[in-house]
Length: 103
Image (cartoon, rainbow, N blue to C red; front, side):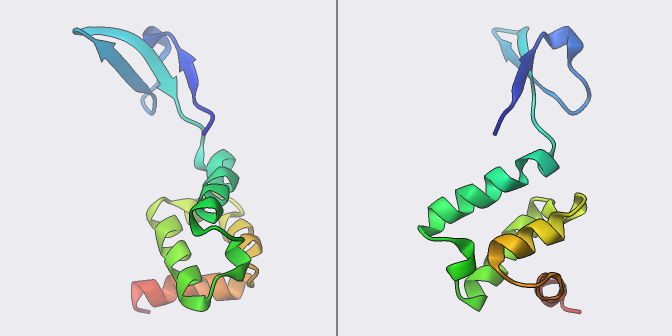
């Protein structure tokens, strides 16, 4: 997903520091979700074996549930990006989210 390696002493609070035999070896800076959302959607398509827009309603709702759990809708334009990938409107994505929350 495009992580970046850097010296452990340059690690920030959101970076992952990897250690070997008690010594910090390298830090990994993971990309922000906004940068990764397209990669996540592409991986979901590969897993499904077809474009997400071709899934039935129930499968699309499951995709939205998974993306919600990963924080995809907390990023700017997340709903629009997901709606485009699913071939539905933003309103439909919001309905799926509200259904999941029991609203």
